[in-house]
Image (cartoon, rainbow, N blue to C red; front, side, top):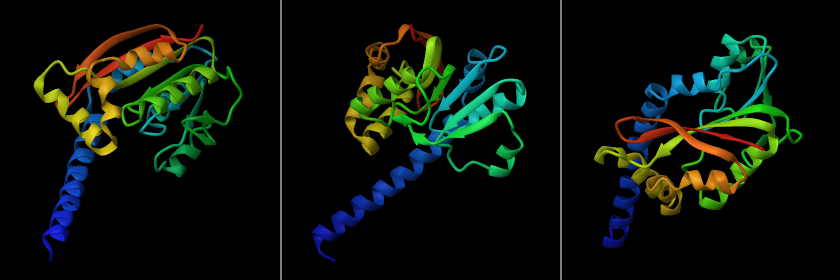
Amino acid sequence: MSVIHRSSFIRSLFRRLYMFVYKWGYRVTIRMGGWWEPLLEEAAPGPGERILEVSAEGCSACETLARSYPAVHFFAVRPTRPNENELKSLSNLELLRGDQYCIDCRAASFDKVICSLALHPLRQDKKLALLKEMRRVLRHGGALYLADFDKPLRPTEIHALRGTGYLFGPDTAKSHTDGAWLDLIKKAGFVGVRRVTTYSERVGRVAIVRARRT
């Protein structure tokens, strides 16, 4: 094996190993994070509300909320490997066609949108496109509830964002590393943008952010 081929093989092997470790740590952060329950509490529905979820986890939040609030209608975009048998038992949860940037529904259709860990892997233009699409489907006065990686306050909290930059490009992680991703939410046309709280999750700090459509 030539030196060039050996070097290429080692880089490929290292990248696969890094991807495995990153995904494992990422899943632990998602499934075991202290931010999850507070996000659901913040986005808890009122009577008659329509709530949409757009997230890396597909419809996890809406599945949980739909079981607790059977009188409220929930929607989700692009679920990740949904258990269709379980979803069929939830008459108040509907899956929408489309993707993160073109949701198959009319404008001003929802009272609330929940978005968890979907922004950080995207380039700046894609982050903005997703935020604008979520604003489009929100009713006037509707609320956006975001959970995503925020500016690290401890040395170990940088690892998730370093992994993001390595796997998806440095432009994806930069605005989260310095906390400027909240400015993108304002740029998309939202008002009242604020961090509700932040949580240290070993390899990253997750912020819960609330914003509103005028």
